[in-house]
Image (cartoon, rainbow, N blue to C red; front, side, top):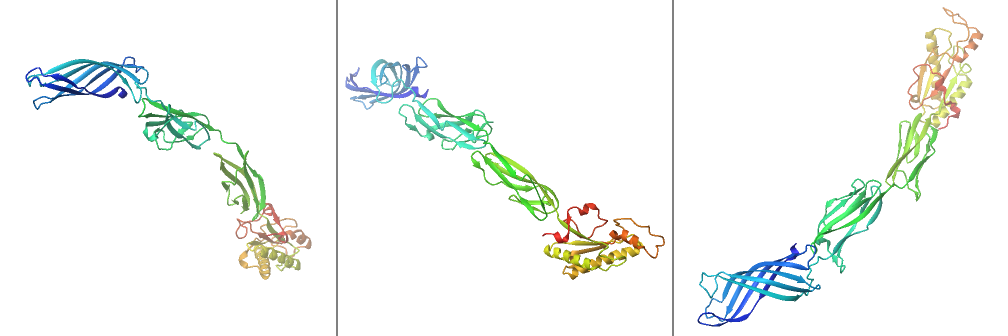
Length: 475
């Protein structure tokens, strides 16, 4: 609409004579300045315009004897402008002048002049149809594919179409950016943006959306828009494996697990993290597992790559190889606590194993057969256990690594033989002594990781599981 407004000015000159004495010859030079507005006869065409205008008029009477050569007034016009070929314009106007105080009448008088004019013009710039300059916004690139959660950006430009002249983005107003599907493609700064502000988009889910930029340029009527297609792609497939899937080892050994993340393009690098579900059983550091105590733990490797997070697990079973020795009737004689020569040899084997494993602790537990009083048997069992402890200390083992306890006849391995009489017989037959030989013993147990001191009660067969001889005990 504003393009149909214009400012016009014209000046005339001519000679005339005054109508009253003195009849001077006067050079008449009227000047007009008008604001005009063209109304298209057809809204879709600028070829024919109805012209309306109004403005200021100043008349100059040069050659008058009086000092008053100037008159101020108002002027208006109505006419038609007809466009020819681009540069040529034909114009026909009717002009009306209103002079509140003309020189040739009383000071309080008025004067109104009516006139007509016609002309032909040639435009040095522009064209008479006043056609808006064609322009466009452009996005580079106009088609983008990206991975999920990846960010992309666009280069925005503006130019005139006729001469391809670049339009400064600072001259583009009301820039707005929108996504056709905000759940698929998010515009980081959606809405109005500055021309010099970087615009980035993020692919939020698999699909497609159109990003549209809209703006106006002061050099043309209306607005223009540019679009780009954005396609978030599915995540690149890859797999995570672990080898082995199960492993076992004895405390304090362990195992090494290897996790591999691989896509079609190749290896995706090291794991993001390793973890153990039961660190009190097994710890893990970059796939290297160390057994801490007996039990089972799940070892998990985690990896984040190509916009995906994956985990893979394996099972680690930790066992404890502990030693046990039993000094039976061939090591202790009936009713005696003295070690035999074979017993002394066994003590050397136990001491050697304890020296190889400085952290080893042992429980020494004394037992008797069923013959004799409970008080006597309790004392005898304790003496036998202490005799074994003394033998270990003699072989260089510190006493603080040894725990001693006597169980008397509470933990019988066999009940064969005649029952004890009440009061007990003064003499147990050799046959009964042989049948009860298994009960006359001292047991040496290597502590497992969770054990402290000697056992509170009789040990069962479960305590024997996994036990080895002290001579076979490796560090």
